[in-house]
Image (cartoon, rainbow, N blue to C red):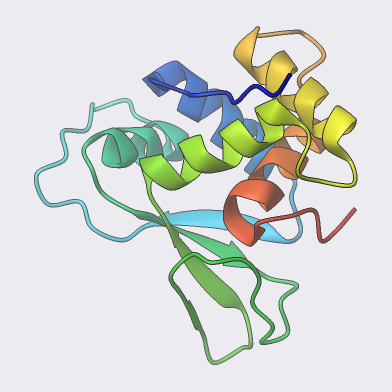
Length: 148
């Protein structure tokens, strides 16, 4: 029997949890706003709240791979900056697609690990940590685990 996961909705809290946990202390990844026109931000929003608001408003965020050395991965729109970093443009649908791949756990060498990472995020498990968030973001942004 073969099954396929479909993610119908990601909440603001889901996105903040994923993005905050993945970028906190990361040496390879950071995110930035690219277009904020028409996005409603709160007065007390942190950067992760702002990223989530932008994504939920249909905007893209830019995820920068500081380890890239001008080499890009995956299929997302991207550009290389003057320092050789690859800047990927990520939408809410890209995040859903990447998480679905992890949830199904069959498309990757480390499928069982990625499924556990997804399950911990989806179930708001206390086990969800930077290592798991980093792995999910690598699949979302790079299309696979590149940095371990």
